[in-house]
Length: 227
Image (cartoon, rainbow, N blue to C red):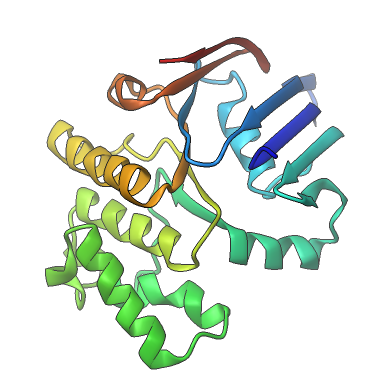
């Protein structure tokens, strides 16, 4: 069984200017262990598709299955719980909590899961070490560079033992050096631990690392290439 299965997914946004079809009858399968990039020009539907897979946005038609679970049929509360325990998110804007340290940001999702304090702090430190930033564990986001903040975001995404990680334009605010380091970390997690990564990106540096490239145009899949 595929890890992620999309069947005829449609998402339409209504505005004063008229309806916009952001995702146009997309069907896809993503297998466990993939390192896949969804690419295409701005406005092609990349982020909307990722948000639908992550349960952040509900499709107007079609179904999305994660493992054995059909997330399109879940209640809001069930969907929140499912995201918490199954999906890791890495965003373009980092989305770290400003008043928390790197360790506290990483451990926060485990607190929501009810993990004991000693256990979650140990795992947080282990994850910060894995992404090469354990020396900044007690720093708050405003004391970290963009690249360091994004490493914390990756550690946080891993903290809940997710089935996969969705990364929406994760390198957009990073310089070449930070991008290379971040992609090295993600590729190592993919190779060593089998972590599945699904990127939304227009960054050629990410595309060059991907082993599968899905191209969208006007909400439709126009190309799906394994490289």
